[in-house]
Image 1 (cartoon, rainbow, N blue to C red):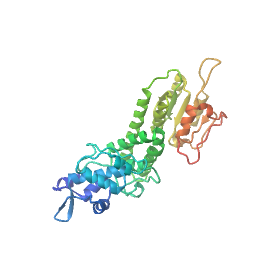
Image 2: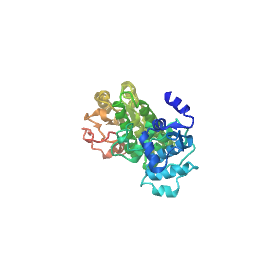
Image 3: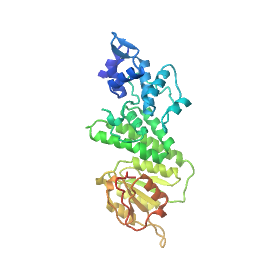
Image 4: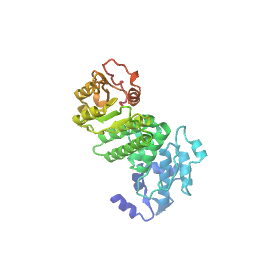
Length: 366
């Protein structure tokens, strides 16, 4: 409330400190942009105190948007100043000057926001920022997505997730953009007391919305009522559903029938579903060790159904870091997302040695 009172009493605009907090950058960054690129306030109260008018704020927010998309700061500043004089689209020249693989989003009326509303977060790499996330060596899209999430800029988060799927495809977008950013948010939350919980919730919600949109779009193209479905379920007590939602969407894209039960499925319900639908594969997700239920997985793997003389059973995949090195007869242990897809869509390529497969050392679990 105090920050908003500061903005309201500013009269000729907001202060540098207020704007820095709203954009998620340091006041030093704003001063640097003013000194280097001329992105400063048009009015200085009493000749020295900087006050940012609505047009100034819109210009800096456009700078945030473009740098988050990967445009070099100098070029982003030039475009932001032009945008302050009128809407600027992603012209061929602007796209040509962007780094390889970087998509420059169109500027819409929804991007220009009033002072005091969140905007995409620019500035130095997230791993170096005081309010940033420990991303490490990742794609530029991860940094832009993380900055937008920290700023609670829902429109920018959704735009970047949609662009990542469109540019890289679902599998690459999940493995190379969504997962690294989700992990960085989770690490930041765990190390910061109860801070950044809202960031994790926002990002998770939009990742889920993106994955479900892919599923709904793909599932509408024909319906296979002959092939047994793939059953996806979180083990009892496990509420981390995003990896299964990603697998659900990827299988739907490949026209593989899929049945997803979601989080914390009770053992009785899981066994009932297996016996009712006779799935070709069952994927059991465990995020933490205390939810990994090996006896239940073995029971599912040993369950047979069908007419006498032609009874069969499902292949069972143990997915997620919670399983550790656990395995057992008839259980498969994919080391990453792409391997899980391969085992499900081309089961004849897996070894049938009954010993299962262990996760690859250091690999990201499916």
